[in-house]
Image (cartoon, rainbow over all chains, first blue to last red; front, side, top):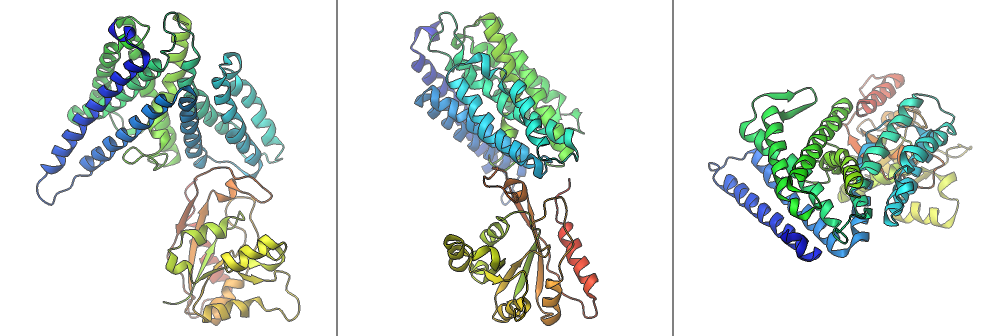
Length: 318
Length: 174
C-alpha cells in the first residue's frame, strides 16, 4: 500500500494534485467547447459548465487550505457550510413571530455546540445533541410564543433543517474523531474519500446525463435527472472510490461497496431536497456558488451520505 | 425626475435601512425615510443616526394641535426629495398586510404627479422582529413593483386598496 507508506501530508498532497489535474482537464475541455461555438453564439449550458468548473476550483482550494491549516480549521469550515445551508433552508421555510427564539437557538446555540463537541471528540453527546436535546427544546421554545397557528408544521420544519444542515453535515468532520487501528493521523483521508466519491458522483451524473441522457427519471421532482445519468454517475464514482482504496483503511472491494452505498444515498439526498425545493416553488436554495446555486444545492448529497459513512467506518473499523 | 414615495410592508426596525441601502446611490441621496419622532429622538445615538446618517423626515405620530405631518412630507416632495413610508402605520407581527392608513392618499391628492412605488420586504420581520435584539441570519429579499399614480376621479378607499393589492402581489408565494 504505497500511499499508506508515505506520510499523511504527502498523501494528501498527491490527492489534491490529482484533483487539480482533473480540474485542469475539465477547464480545458470547457474552454474548447466555448471557443469552438460558431461566432456570436452563446450556449447557456456551456456558460453554466464554465461557471461550475470555476466554482470547483475555488471549493477545492478552500478545502485544501482548511486541511493544510489543520483539524480545527476543517471543523470550522464545515460549521460555516452548515451555517450557510441552514440560512438558505430557514429563509424559505414558514415560521412565525413565536419561533424567533427557537431560530436563535438553532443558529447560535445548537450549531456552534454541535461542532464544538466534535472538536473535543465527545461522541456520546454530539451523536444525540440534535435528535434528542434540540428535538425537545425547540418546540418548548416555540410554545412560549403562545401561537398555535400551523404549530406542528413550523416545529417539524425547524427540526428537519437542523438535522439536514447541521447534524448530518457535521458527520463529515466527525470522521476526525474516529480512532482506527493503524490509521492514526490519516483521518483527513476519510473526508477526502467521502467527498470525492459523493461529489464526483454528482459530477458524473451531470456529465453522463448531458452526454447520453434520454429517459427522464422523475420530471416532477428534478427535470434534469436522467436514468442514464444516474447509472453512469453511480458506476463511475464507484470506480473512483475503488481506485482510492489505498488512501483508506478498506480493501479495494470494500472501498467499492462503500462508495456505491454512499453514492446511492447521495443521489437520494439530492432527490429529497429537490422535492422540497419543488414544493416551495424554488429552483435553487440560493446564489452563493455560481453555476451551482446555493450552498445547500452543493452539499445535499453529502448530508445524506456522511452519517451513514461515519457509522459504517465506526462499526467495522473503529 | 419626479419625486417618488416608496411604500413597503413593515415588520422590522431594519425595514427602512434595508430599503435605503439597496437604492442606487443617486436615488438614495434624495430619498428620506419617514420616521416617528417619538422613537427616534429618544437617545443620542438614535438621534444622530436618523438626523445625520439616514436624514429621516421626523413626524409626530400622535398628532397634537399645530402639527401637520402631511405638509412636512409635501414640502419634502416639492423640494424634489423622495420618501420611504410604511402605510400600515406600525410593525405588523402577523402575515400579509395590516389596513393602510390614509397618509399616502393625502399626499397623492395634493401632488397627483407623485409616483407610489410598492416595495415588498421579505424575511426581515423574521430576522429582527418587534422586540427582538439579535438578528437571525436569514437571506432577505426586496421586491420592487411598478409605480402607481392616483387616477383623476379615484376615491380614497379605492386608491388605498389598489396600492395595498399591488404590494401584496409582490409577496413571494407561500
